[in-house]
Image (cartoon, rainbow, N blue to C red; front, top):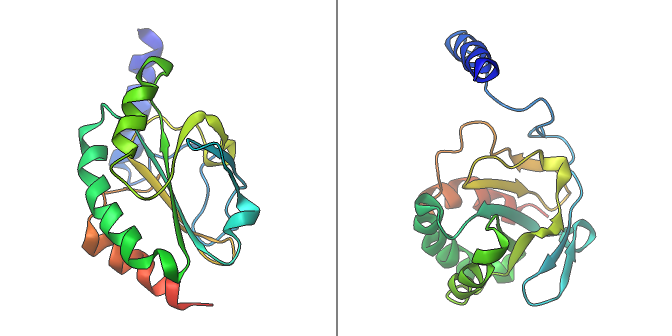
Length: 170
């Protein structure tokens, strides 16, 4: 408990000083996005090389996460509207093994693919310790949304403002 109190105190001081509370390993917007290699729930593979030339959203969620579940319908509408323009969206479930079937059942409601964190190599994005967490990678492999910096949640307006301009850039 003593270690946690020390961590909390340091975090509070940094927060009050205006320092962003982000892990040291977190990625940077405007820099090349870390690689990833994901086995989708349908068994297909999706690697960073397959995202080349597309705008890719990596969305970390869980079946028990209420804010995650609230975002998903807006993401579905946005994905359906823009998928043919080169948008890929992968919903990576952080569920424990015993909840995997629940996550699969939820994903049946969506047309974008899902994956399970244990089948995804995404270490370059840091230890995913809070959700929902969403990263956006442009057509050239550059990270355009670093979810570690104040991810306020996603709705259609936010998606349209953050992602639609990236879809028009070739």
